[in-house]
Image: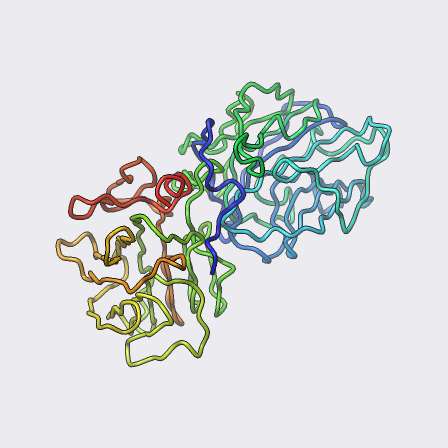
Length: 466
């Protein structure tokens, strides 16, 4: 199983994006506002950075304007097939219709999506341009361009501008994942270089640049998500968006310039339901984190969030995938091909280190917070696990590990079970807030164990220690 890294996950950058907003489709999270007046409907640019949560779950809207009851709507969204769509329909006539052949299924990557429209252009294909990570998309399964001087619904005086779901009624098609640096420029069709640049040392890495100096125009806006009490704040000074089903805890530090681990919805062996930007899961057999490591010292937390006495719940570390023939169950214990894993019946948990060299048990109930300290720098390689920051670890075992395969956080659950995972961006308010020694992440407990520092699983730390 290879280490999974996003397009812009490792390289440190000169410009830092501070925050993103986490959208949960199950919460119907969205934000919207009305335009300030008549803008330029022929020439405009929309730009955003997105990191995917759930995929293949239906249409997931990034931007929409209009009313789909009357078949009059602009949409930029991911379809259930995980392709991108740009569409502008008025009175049932589809005047702009682009659907990529490329699919987007990397839950660890931040994608930059830019749509530049200038319908005054004489060449049809120049009137709508779609860019992903600084590169123009030219392969489309569906490709319809508007007539010259066509007036889109974008910057229309009527129809709400909606981020994260479909506008007007019927609502739905909620985006699931993270969004950052959401920008609308009214009156200019800009190249993606107005929003990002290729790194000079690593020319395949596309990274954000400061957009605060752009001319946004009449209906332009800039969402930087830096005010947790007002996530819909327009940093450009225009009318703020009204948030719906978004809370202060939906502000995260998982951004295009520092990407944190989440659970991996592509690793889903038994119909697990991922939520909260893939930081929570209900039921489902096995999943792992999106980031794996072969060296360094790393910290993360998990919390059991159900009370079912029938639930089986396992958490630990693993070197990746295994198949059914690699598992032998023995009472309340679970043996994997290579993993240190909690496994439970009701609220009793057992630990097995790599292979089957013994274990211990501890009661872990609903709401208990488990802290993981993974040490791949010591000679023996070690996993230490603490419950509710107790003085004595409930697990402290050496790992038989050669360093050849990446190690991932690991979750195994059975019917009726649920858990949340904090790799540095908690989904709920913390009793206390502790960052790692580099100032990254927010955890319930300290990331230092016995005077040894451990670090959050994020791209900036990987660049330093990974």
